[in-house]
Amino acid sequence: MGRPLDLDVAIYRDRVQLTDRKTRRLADQRANYRFSSDESVVSDVRYLEDTIVRAIRQIAVGDDLFILQDPVAHVVGCETALDKEERAVVETALRQSGMTSVVFEID
Image (cartoon, rainbow, N blue to C red):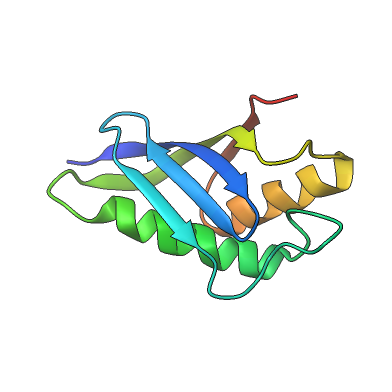
C-alpha cells in the first residue's frame, strides 16, 4: 500500500524544488526548457509542468511508494511575488502534473 503524495513546492527562475513532506526527500530540478522570462519567473506553463514532472520522478526514486490519490502541492516559496496571473500559471502546471489540490502558503 502506498501513501498520498504531499509536496512542498518552491519556484525559482528556470528551477523548481520539491520536498516530500513525509520523507523530507528533496528534488532540485533545473528546467530543460526555460519557463521563466525577463518579466516573470513563471511565464510558460508547459515548460514549468515539464520541470515539475521531472522533479516528481526524482522524489519517486527509492523504496517509499506514493500514490497519486488526492496528491497535494503546497506552494511555499517563489523567487518573486506572484500576481494573480502567475498564480494561475503555477496552479495549472501543478494540476497538469497530477496534483489534485494546490495550496498557496506564500503571500
